[in-house]
Length: 403
Image 1: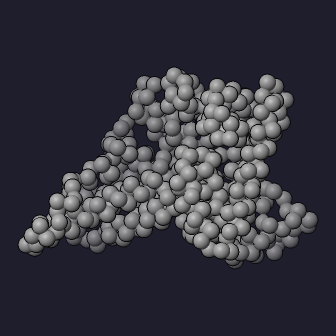
Image 2 (image 1 turned 135 degrees about the horizontal axis):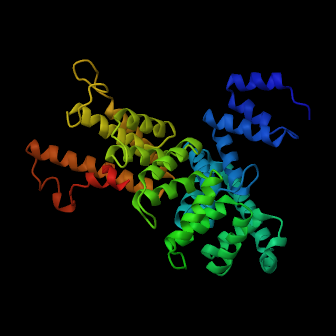
Image 3 (image 1 turned 30 degrees about the vertical axis):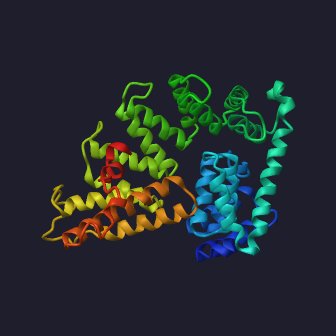
């Protein structure tokens, strides 16, 4: 199909994501161009494009399979209320792909999708597609004695994940390892990540940090940002290796820049706060948090809020960043509300981490309101205080040493 690039440029410049998506879906368009169009549309906030990118990472349609990236894209679209993405996210929880297998969360998401009648088919399509890939992967079971002769490495990888958690086959970590090792030989970076995780966490084998480190290094050399971040964590914490803050810093920087990893940016900011191998640099810390916020990370919103509070109450003194005589107060309430809203949206999708963090925020609000009521002379008995354990939990979430 001949492409009118002048028209294509006009469509992109218009920032009309509906038209950009339509162009991406045109029959016969170059695959590389198709994914670029979806990436442009997703960057403009279009949930349909986000879902397409998630599906591409899940199936290896455009990219090498990466279930973590697939889940992230599905979740971004689902947060925006895009029900087809919720359907695919539900299947990831059922299958344990990119997340811990959790049938309760899967059922919760499915109910969110199917309560709107017109989206029943979206859930059916997601289940049908998932079942199709599983069945195709199961056809390879009898060929495992000749792994090198299996051409479809994407299905082979899916089969390995099935053996790892015992989904539709009897759990067999040794078979999973054997398949992952074959894929590692083929430079399949996500297989390196999975195999490294098995050795690092002792999933059915003895913990072996040396093997985990070697595999993370291989995947990092193939620009897998999750591997970079995990390897950085090993160097930062001295887990199986000598503590090396410079290596950790470099890897966090690469993961943040190459993979847009907001969690790597937050961990790098934490190193600057704790002066782990670096001199504290508040301008750099703020810059890292702001970039993580731009990537939608609610943790960064709270960390930046708490940092700003320290300037405003005088706990930290940096006149370049904040001078109360010349600067207006930082809008810390807005950062707090932004984080709370994001946690709420993620919690509404069943995200366990978001549920915990939202609980901590609302628990703190309850404690503060309780203390304010007491200060105004309200009786503790009226507040039913015996029903609450109002301990101070602030340090568990905002303590930079626990990030």
